[in-house]
Amino acid sequence: MQIYHTLQIGEFHTNHCEDFLIIEDISDTEKLLAVFDGCSSGKESVFASILFGKILRNISKQEFHKSFVVKEKSSIQEKMKAILLQFFNKLKSTKQTLDLDTYELLSTVIICLINTENKTAEIVVAGDGLVTVDGKQYDFESNDKPNYLAYHLQKSFEDWFTNETQKITINHYKDLSLATDGIFAFKNLKNRTKEKPESEIIKFLLHESVNTTLDAKIKALNQQYDHLPTDDIAIIRVQN
Image (tube, rainbow, N blue to C red; front, top):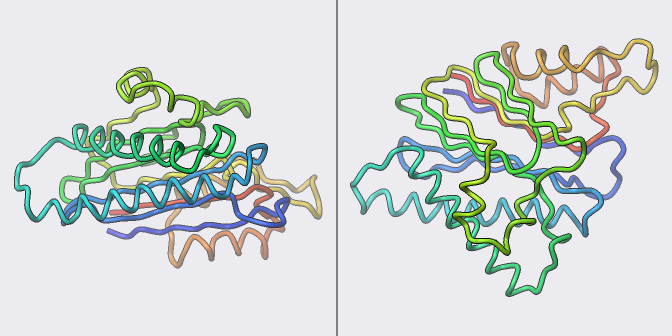
């Protein structure tokens, strides 16, 4: 199994990359992957993306240590729900402790739990972005109005989780990718008449083979075709 990833600031952003990503072990046979996209109209949205990642990284470490003690096996769906419960409650607690308002916590999250043995995966998308599995695309489009998790922190976890419809269960995968919506923002700023369609960019980055790194692929898009990501972008791609 190979895991490729890239995190890059968009050409139209100047101060911070507002996206973030994590790749963490939660047991010998399970990994937690996530990409985050901070809202540019929020308050210091880079903070929200990094905070979400730090909380999930902390949960992953705890789960990894627990896996050596607790030998009972739960389904991937049960484990995902347990992780999301911890994430939801820790985020709510942090909001209260730091007296944060909702606009300081506006970040989308695509979170994926994979089993590296049987190649199953469970994915939950809070907001927008793109998921691809063996050539099939799941485009979570929000018309620039993502349903941020931060909007639901005043509810109970069960209320949010039960009504969250953007869930994908994968029984077997060979090639799986998570991407923030920066994947749709590649532009040819030198010659707009030669701009490639989104489908070609997605095919090149998420479907065609990766011989080196995703960073190298994005560099090639710039050097060979004058295409740059105008929005921040985070991608994780897993190939078996």
